[in-house]
Image (cartoon, rainbow, N blue to C red):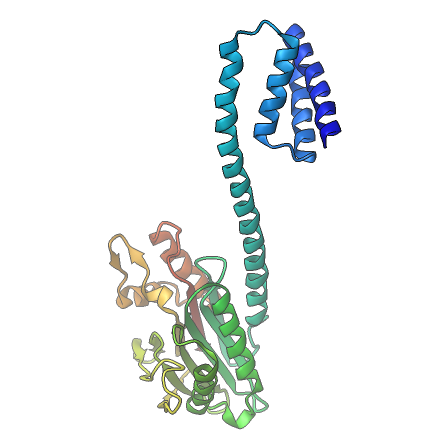
Length: 337
C-alpha cells in the first residue's frame, strides 16, 4: 500500500507541475483520469489531501507556513466529509438494490393479472388497471368454467409494496385451485376468507367483489366483501343502479357468510366493477361524487367497453393533474346480444 501511495504521489506531482506551468485542457483531463485511479485504489478524500499537501511542499518549499497549516483544517473537513460520503454511497447502493427488488416484484405482480380478456360472443368486456406507484394494491381476475360461465373478481389489498403483491398471488392461486362447484360468489368468498384469515397479518385487509355471469341464462350473481360498490346499467330504463353487496372484508372473521345477489342482464345492460381509486379521485380539496363517475360513463357509453374505460380513466387522471393518488381499476361487462 505504501508503494502504491508513493507511485500515486509521483503521478500526481507530474500532473500538477505540468498543469501549473501550461494550464491546458489536457491537464484537466489528466486530473479527471487520475481521480479514477484514486477510486480504483480506494484512496479516501482525506488521504488525497495529504498527497496534495506533500506534493505542494515538494514543488514549492517556500510556501508560507500558514498555507501549509491550512491543509490541517482541510484534512479535518475532508475526514468528516469522507465518512459522510461513504455512508451516502452505501445508502445509495442499498436503495438501488431495494428498487431492483421492487421492480422484480412489480413485474411478477403483472404476471398475476389476466393476460387477455375472455372472448365470449354475447359480451363486450373492457378493463383498465393502473397502479399509483410501482406496486399496486388492486387486483382483478377472470375465471371461465367448463359450462362457459364467466367469473369476475376485483379486489383491493389495503397495503402497498411487496406484501400486497404476495397477498395478490395468494388470492390468485387460491381462486384457481377452487373446484368448479365452489365458484359461486358466496361460496368462493367464504373459501377465500378462510385462506386470508389463516395467512394474512392482522394489519392488512382485503376487500373484494366477485360475480358469476351465465351467458346461457344471462343471469349475474354476485357477492361483496367490504368492497367499493359498483354499478349496474339498465338499458331499457336508461338508469344506473348501485351494486350494493354487504359483507365483511376478507380475513376479519373465519365464519363470515356472504350474501348473494342476482340480476337479470338484458341486451345493452352492463355491469361496472371498480376500486376506490376511481370513486376517491380528488379534484382540488374534495373527492369526486359517484354521480360524476356515472356522468363520465354516460359520456362514453356509445363506445366499446375498452374504449369506455380508457376514456373515463383519461378524464379522471386529467382532473387530478395527471397524478394518481390511489390505484385505479375499472371494469365493464356489457351484454351485446
